[in-house]
Amino acid sequence: MPRLPHLVGTTTAAVALAVLATAPASADELTVSQPRVVAHFDLAAGQTPENIAVEPDGSADLTFASARQVAHVTRDGNASIRATLPEEPNPNTPVLKAATVFGIARAHDGTLYVDYATGTDKTGIWRIAPDGSAPRQIAQLPTTALPNGLALDERHGVLYAADSAQGIVWRVPRAGGTPTVWAKDTALDPVPVTGAGFGANGVKVHGGAVWVSNSDRGTLLRIPVRPNGSAGAVETRATGLTNVDDFTFPGPHDDTVLAALIGVSELVEVRPDGTHSVVLTQADGLSNPTSVAVRGCTLYVNSAAYFTQQDPNLLVAHLDR
Image (tube, rainbow, N blue to C red; front, side, top):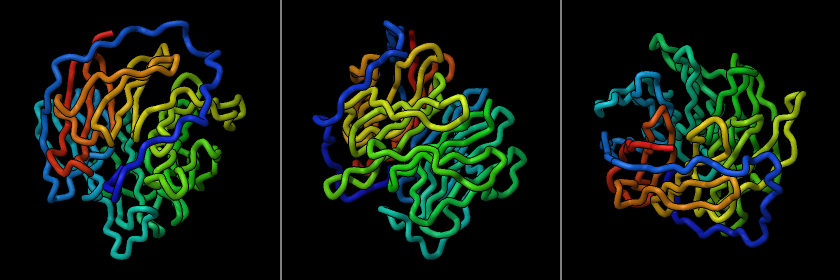
């Protein structure tokens, strides 16, 4: 979530938790230890790390939202620029009015997919091939869209993009083509007037469903994927996640989530019953965290410093289950 004039508290009183019929009775306890910042970035150069994809060797690919770039960061913190999205001289991006690179997803063959929002015909999903060729747009979204989180379902060959401005989850063939509105619901919408303008934000595919966070509403949502590929009814799985941004599942076998709370600079563990607790804070190095990823026993959290204006960075920690 790029810099906005203000952040607001979430409204959760009217949101009821759905019946957790599909959740396990219990989840593994998570312990996060040894946090350390491995890379610091240049705020003046627009190096605001928005989203993250982890490579097999433990290095990370980050989107630099304000610089329109994708950076590669090695395990020891050395950063280089993998790609730059084309400049948009007349951006009219919803909410932000600036060309911004958001979510990133990685395929097993090394292909990267990113969301680019400009308020022009460049808005959509772009592919970055492993061979280093220039990024190529594979799907064009409406100029009114604000594609934020991005998830790849390789098994079914589709991408899901969360539209923060319009409260939509878009579905796009991995090979590219015409986007379709996969899910549209008031639970995905931003909060009118009092909200920051960011509804649906992070998105992940997990356990036969598409999961979405809503920043303005502070909620974590689950949308089942029906056998025909269509969206089932939206379920609210957690509330009270103030200014939640992106999130991840640390393991494949339960619905425990690690979520970045951008406004309060915290990382929280969200349990399958909807309760949550803080596992990392600003004291550990977080500075408006926007995304989180896990590979093996390593936890990655990137901070964009949109509001603190201090120390955009990549933090890693040890994760025990």
